[in-house]
Image 1: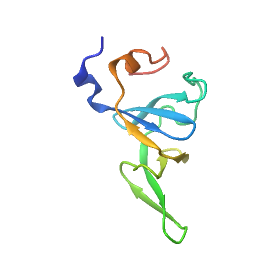
Image 2: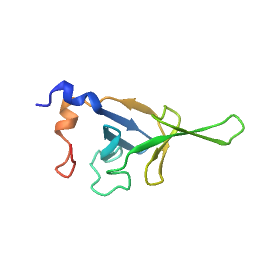
Image 3: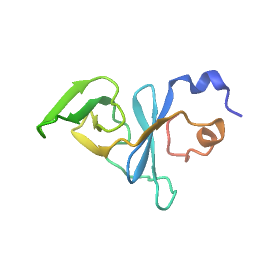
Length: 105
């Protein structure tokens, strides 16, 4: 069983199609929301969060460093951009225990 203090650095960014599981701002796992399967190959795996990109009222892009917010796109370190964030969650110990073997947590 995973200790809850271990989960303090974990979070899940939920977009339209995927869950991005992070530990200390690094993507350690990606799960497809349609199939609920962990993806072994995804460009975000191993990348750090750089910031978020919001849309201005006039339709322009407004990037910022730090944690992205719901409604923004997530920007990872290697120029990977997600669709808009729909939710930010904390994983349960059961979810962390279910991470596939290739996850480095």
